[in-house]
Image (tube, rainbow, N blue to C red):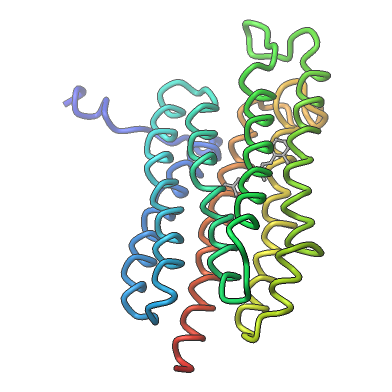
Length: 253
Ligand SMILES: *C/C=C(C)/C=C/C=C(C)/C=C/C1=C(C)CCCC1(C)C
C-alpha cells in the first residue's frame, strides 16, 4: 500500500509553486488539444498558424510534465528544462507574428530578426540564472547581484527589440499596411501580450537569490510562480488571439 502511495505527490496548501506546475501542465495539455482540433474548422491559410499555436502549448506541456515532477521531487528550480522549453517556444511565437503578417508583405528577414532577438534574450537569461553564484544553502553568493544584473540587462535588450517591433517597428508597420482589420487587431493584442504578459518574466528573474527583488520575495523558489503564471497567460493567450483571427477571417469567406 505504502509503495503505491509513494508515487502520488502530495501538494501542500502553502506550496503555490507545485500547484501552478500541475495546473500549468494540464492547461497547456488541454489548450493543445483545443488548437489541434480547431485547426480543422478554419480556412486553409490559417491552418499553419493554428498548428503552431498547438505546438507551442504542446511543447510546454511536455516540459511542464518533467518540471513539475522535478520540482515535486527535489524542491529545486528546473532552470535547464525551463530554458529548453523557452528556446523552442519563443521562436515559434516569433513565427506566429510572421505567419500573420506574411499576407501584408512580411519577409523571412523580419522573422529571423525577431528570432535572433529572442535568442539573445534567452541565452543571456540562462547564463544569468544557471551560473548565478549561490552558497550551499541556496542563498545568494559573492557577486550574485552584479552577475544577474549584467546578464539581465543584456537579455532585456533582446526583449526590448521585440517589444519595439510590435509597438512601433516593423511588425507595427506591416500590420498597418494589412487590409484585414482582424489581423490589425490581432497584432495589437499580441503587442499587449509582449508588453504586459512578457514583463512578468523579468520580475520573476529579479526575485531569484541575489536579484533586486530578493529582499521582498524571500522564497528562492518563487521565481517559478512568476514563470508558471506568465507561461500559461502568454502561451495560451497568444494561441487564442491567433485562433480568434483565424475564425473571424474564416467566417467571412
Ligand atoms: C513561452 C515563454 C515565453 C513567452 C518566455 C518569455 C521570456 C521572457 C520575455 C524573458 C525575459 C527575460 C528578461 C527580459 C530579463 C531577465 C531574463 C529573462 C530571460 C527572464
